[in-house]
Length: 111
Image (tube, rainbow, N blue to C red; front, side, top):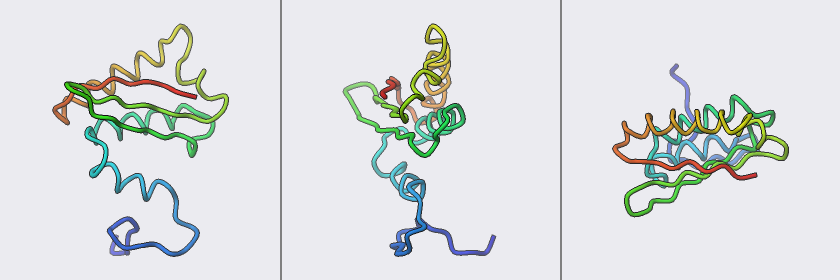
């Protein structure tokens, strides 16, 4: 508490800034389902071996938002799970979170 936080509209010039600082700014500005995106990113990062390689891109369609998850090499199998059960559970969870955003979402996983 009481400190200066990164990602508040001021440029950060040192090389220690992380991509999550930038991602936090993008959630409210570029991705149309910020709650669903945050839940999706959190769940996927907790599953994979390389959480820094996780990227979530959102595209707004006619009636839905399409969220595409990209993971590092070798992590796609962990996210999909046996018979796709993990992926389906993630989709169900993210769809529930998207209700708070007032949108419907589709989640796709890419390597």
